[in-house]
Length: 324
Ligand SMILES: [Cu+2]
Image 1 (cartoon, helix red, strand yellow):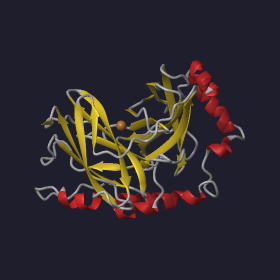
Image 2 (cartoon, rainbow, N blue to C red; image 1 turned 90 degrees about the vertical axis):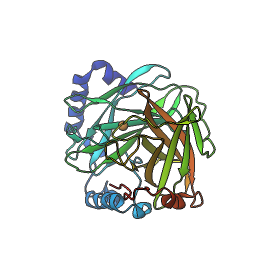
Image 3 (tube, helix red, strand yellow; image 1 turned 60 degrees about the vertical axis):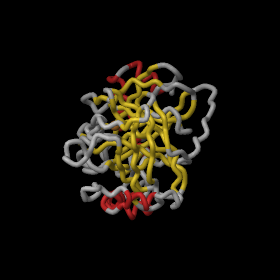
């Protein structure tokens, strides 16, 4: 923490100088993927092909490496510049994405209405935050962030480098010093409460292939039918695998204004679990001008009705499931 914190104090100028020094010195090796060896099992060509396969045929999801487990992939490297170090205080988190040449990437395409999605969550899955940092001209992304309790956190940067053309999710650990009280993963449940809203989950995760997940939002027993668009959809779902926090790409079915998608109470997603195991689902939804997060633990074991739900929840108007 010390080095990044100091860098932060000295500001951007020194941070850039630091990067320059690293680039000029012999330390550059470990920072950059080596096309011959370091990226051996995730070679540029191979990985891009695998990504494409996963996007187009979710059935093959089990054979690809999930996102979020690496700090560097396809030549792109997540580089924290400054990270919060104290619990309960708002501090700046800043980072860059270095491109295949080692320079900070500044050209990003929007995905779900934003050029950068940043997820920060405890390694124990507590304290989930989904935020959108601002990028300075030199490619440094920054956001004020408060991490409430000591412990190890995972940050996920989810973005589309323009030169790369497809999305990447890179992950890095953050540590907040102090006595840690790790939370155990809550038991699987079909309902979640948040701020007076009840969200009910139908369907589930099926190992190795796409399964439908439908989340229904109610408040005081009434269905919520005026959800507000958030990030180009009526809900945004992130799923993380217990044990290693593999990050699942989840796609909403339909979007606001497409003439078919209602603003609640149901929000439907397609997700592919890369394996059996427990997953934590985080649904961001917007209502009354505020974004809230409902959380669920789901077990992907092939017995939770995921495949059956795909049938039950087929769009009554006959629209094909939306897939990217
Ligand atoms: Cu986001």
